[in-house]
Length: 461
Image (cartoon, rainbow, N blue to C red):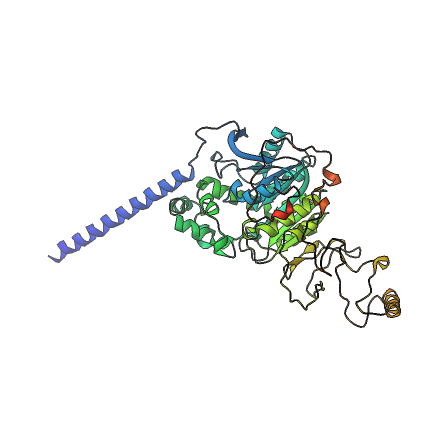
C-alpha cells in the first residue's frame, strides 16, 4: 500500500514539474516573439510623415524664421517639446520628430542607438535643407545631436544638451523600468506596462521631482514603443557612450553649446554637465533648481527663458519670464551677491564653464559693478565722500563695508529702483547671427503657451 502511495506522489510531482517547464518554455517563447515585434505606420499623410532611412518618421513644423530642431530622448516622443515649440514658433521655424521606434514613427527590429539616430537626424535636415540650425536634444537625443554636430558641422549652428549623459555609468533606471530592459524576460515586463497605465506611471515617477508635473502625454509615450526599440536603444547607446568615446569626439565641435541640467535628476547624473563642460570648447551650463529629468515640463517658463536667451543672445528673456520676488515696501529693491554663487568664466581659468543659477526668484543679468563713468553715489552721501570712496575702490579694489549692486533707474520707470514692467522695445529684434534668414510666411500664428506673459508680444496679440 505504501509503495502505491509513493508512486502516486512521484507521478503528481513529475506532472507538476513538466507543467512548470512547459509554462516557462511558453513564456520564454512569447518573450522572444514579443522582442522581435515590429510596428509600421498604417497610413502616412504627406504633411506629417517622411520616409527616411527605410521607415516612416512622424514630424511637426511650426512658426517661421531661423530653423530649430528638437530631438526627444529615450522612452519619449516629440510631444515632450510641445510647450517649448509653441514658444519658439514666435521667432523660429521649429522642427520636431518622433525618432525611429518611438511615438508615432515606424518601429523596426533594428537600427537604434546614437549613431543610427545621428544618421536619421542628418537625413531629416537634408530633406528640409537645414543648415546652421539650432539643435536641442534631450537625454539620448542630446547624444545624437552631439554626434550630428561633430560629423556635420555645417548643419548645426548652435547646440543645446538637456539632461544628456556623457558616459554609460551616468544613466540609471528605477527598478520597475529596469526589469523591462532585461534580455529574454524584459519584453514581457514591458508589455505588462504598455497595457497597464498605473505601472507606466510608476515607471515615469522618478523622471520628475514633483509627481504633479508628470503629464499624461509623457506617461502615454512610455508605452508607445516596442521592446526592441526600448532595449536596443538603451543598450547600444550605453556601448557608444562607454569609455568617453562621444565626449572625445565632442572636442571638435566649435559652435556655442548650452548644457541644461536638473539638479534633482535621478535618471541622468547631473555631474554629466562637468564632462561636457571639459570637452566642449564653447559651453555654458545652466542648473535648474527643483527639477528632475524633464525640466521642459517641470519648469517650463524658466526652461523656455534659458533656451530663448541662448538662441537669441539676449539675456533679458531671463528677466522678462521670471516673476519678481515679493519685497516689503520699506525694503530697497537691490540685488546682492551671494557666497554660493558660481563665478563666470575668467581669463585665468578658461576651462571653467559659465554657470547660471537662480537666486531668490531672479537671475543674474551679468552686470557687475558699473564702470567708473557710470558710477552712482549712494543715497544721501556727500559728493566728497563719494569721491573718496571711488578713489579707495580704484586703489584697493574693495571697501570696508560690503558692496551692493544697485539697479539703475530707467527714465520710463515710475518708481525709484524698481524694474520696468514693460519689455524693452528691441527685445524682439533679430540678432546679427540670424539676419541672413528670412521669416516664412504663415497664414496663422500658433497658439501662445498659457504660461507665457502677454507683455512679451510687442503687438499685443
